[in-house]
Amino acid sequence: MRGAVRGLAGAVRGLAGAARGALGPVRGPARAARGPARAVRGALGSVRARLRPVRARRRAVRVVMALCVLVLLPSAWTHASAGPRLRTTADAPAAEVAVVFGAGLWNGRPTPYLAGRLDAAAELYRTGKVKVVLVTGDNSRTEYDEPDAMREYLTGHGVPDARIVSDYAGFDSWDSCVRAREIFGVRRAVLVSQGFHIRRAVALCRAAGVDAYGVGVAGVHDVTWYYGGTREVFAAGKAALDAVFKPEPRFLGPKEEGVSRALAALAD
Image (cartoon, rainbow, N blue to C red; front, side, top):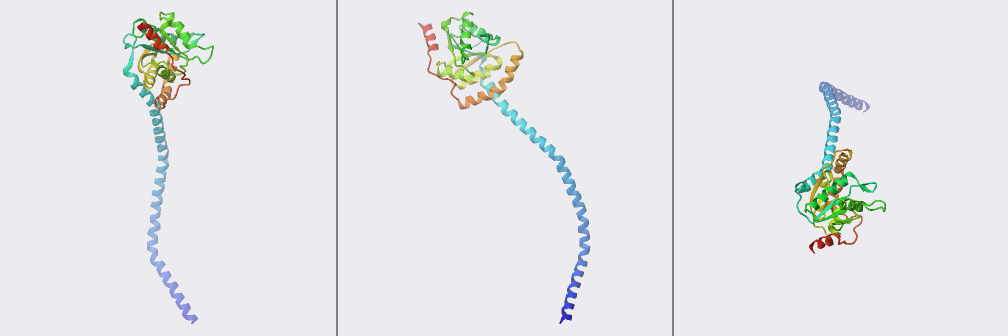
């Protein structure tokens, strides 16, 4: 019996050896084919490694372009909204009210930029383009009073005190526009500011419900001018958010009749 089992095992081993021998010619070419396959995979890996920095750069360029579009879109909106409504003092449309935005004080007196705005407003009044001047600025501190300094300048340049109305809570352009409409009842106005700011002012006042036109005052293109122009790129973003979400001004307060009283006095 044992001899038969050994014989059977030997036969099985013989068959296995024969099978390995038969497969030998097949394995040889298969092993030979692995070499070129590895070479191809290595070449592809090398190509992928070279392409990774290129793809990363492309992604970075796309991100930068998207950010540029996001930054410039608000500026495009202010230009589109205000573009057809910009005028000079000579061709500004008639309106009952001119709105002059504050632009800082030096030792209690208007800065040259603010003085330029006030000169333009005084010219609009003298030529009959406007009947009342609304001066809007910052009076958040007792020692800093833009509206009163603006009033004093205008009266010194021929605008009667009774034709000047002060907004002491014009802390920024949006606040000034909303308060002009909601507090002082201004529905149509000629806005006066520097050229780099006037588009944003017109766009914001229109968003606040004022039928606004703008007079952009020319000035010396000094460091302040270029700083103002650069600042507008970023300020346009806040302006777009204000126009969309329409936040309340820092201080709204009760309605004031200064504009309506000044206009009524002219009608008497």
